[in-house]
Length: 448
Image 1 (cartoon, rainbow, N blue to C red):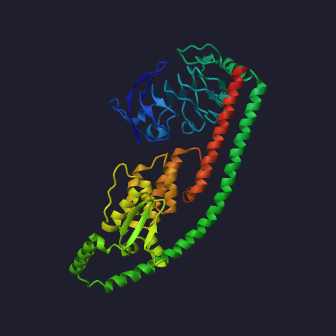
Image 2: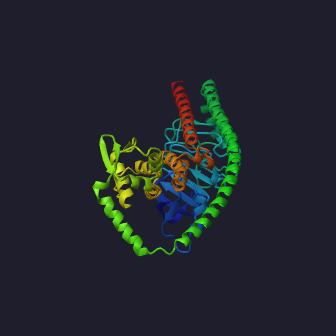
Image 3: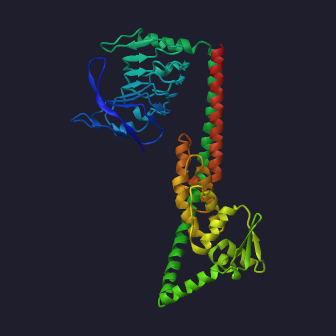
């Protein structure tokens, strides 16, 4: 959660009304992160009284989300001089009941016609001062029957401003504003048509991909039902095994703890004695002398290898770095693990998983949980699936969904790393293709 320092105060409106507002200035606003607003209210007021929410001189990549949950009676949303580059219909979907929108002095380059589709209550639409505004689809104002202010002034090709608000002046009628939008739109109808058609084709490809993904999802749901049945049967078997284990433990409950402690001491002394080391683990050009019985006792993987090959006296382990195996070996002998900042936790987790040292794997996983980022989430998801860790799988998959909010990722896909990777790669390719089309479109517009 991102905490924002804000100022609550009265804001005089041009028609003489005094509106209670929340001002957020000179702060970085993260995209798709829950926001918390901290500030002192005017006496007798609370978040429920806020009408205006105004961001000024901030660093904003995407229109802030979740504001209506904090300010349930808000009517106005303004983002001023905050480097905002785009505004989409999806960005504004939670603000359909607002009356006024102001996105002044930002870096917006284009506005699509469906931006305010279904926004029946809108009275003011202001995009003044976006000097790089190159293209506005002319149907952006269609269906907005309650408009009393529209402002596109201070932009590259748009100069009209309409206002019927008392005490405010405009330089055009609403019809003239709309005519200017159509005039700029029709500078080169053929180029517009071709570019728009290519854009629609790219969208159609994405929709086809999503449809295919839905069909795949149906197959996964059928597999999920079968797995749930198998899990239920497995749980019943597990209950029986646990009950048998309790009986077995009860039969051995008369053993003396003192005797156990004496044996533990003797075993530790034995482990410290190099004379009894009877096996060699080789990593690269380094040899580690160890006790064979300890490897069999502590690692399920090594136990299986050595039981199947009882005559071998050495084992060459690949893909495990020397410094990682040193930590593994220390844990095998003394159940001690030193985790420094520079430790490669992912390599250590992979080694513990590969050797099936469950306790070590659990310890390392708990450290990785706090280190999951957008950059390593896919790798961690792959490791969690390969070596079975539900906590890492859940958190890394959540981070991936957060990183790609536009991408449809079904929760069942958390168990299929390759499918998630292919989906992300295809999505990036389509995004890049659309970006290239847009760049080509604006280049052609500029040259013509």
